[in-house]
Image: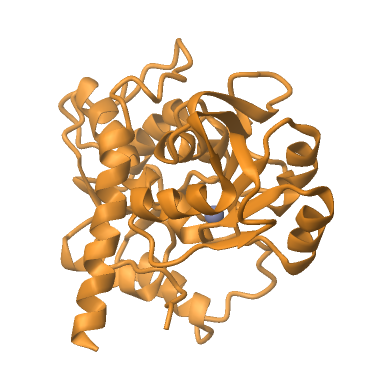
Length: 310
Ligand SMILES: [Zn+2]
């Protein structure tokens, strides 16, 4: 058990380092002009509002889907912040880690509050988390589909990490074509679906991936979508890419790929997104530092993927 936990930990470290290595300092270049970050700080303590403004520069909320819920989830803009922990999800493990590290704010990829709250039952599992967050004054903010979409965000990191050069957006944002969901690009050399799957396993340090389509399918152009990629399948079918790399792909998606003689590689939802955490932490810290806000931003080391391969 301890061995398995250690293996899981070192695998996760490899994923994070992959993200760190791939993320160029100028990758998150999407910085709207004219919004002075941390303008109320100076001699005053950095607060939740300063971190929210840095997040807004990094991943503008206008890029988020209408159904999404990004930005502040719990807390107050004037709560002081000296340390931030970033993770994919708010969970009891991540909350405990943040409190143990004296962090005052969590920045996660997935929103804590997503579906409408009809009751604040503090005895329910999510209610207990909200109760702890408020009592301990641990603020929470999310950057979700805006971080997926933004130029240099999760999709760009995923595209680079699977070896795509000069990837373009698979489903461009209506206003800003450089942002949007999914990416599509060319491999440096032609390969097969099975060989590409094996290469991605090595590149990302994954224990297993699932593939659909014939293993000997020739592949040169590849589309990717971080997180749950089923919604982007119509864009993939219309593209000239032979293979699609994503997470949370479904049985009927796989059957459709067989019918169309195309390839799907499911690397896992968590595994397709965890790469962004180190890059997000570094970028957030750098943006805050530029405005004189000395905030330490750490990546969660306690968070693990929800699925285990046995
Ligand atoms: Zn996700």
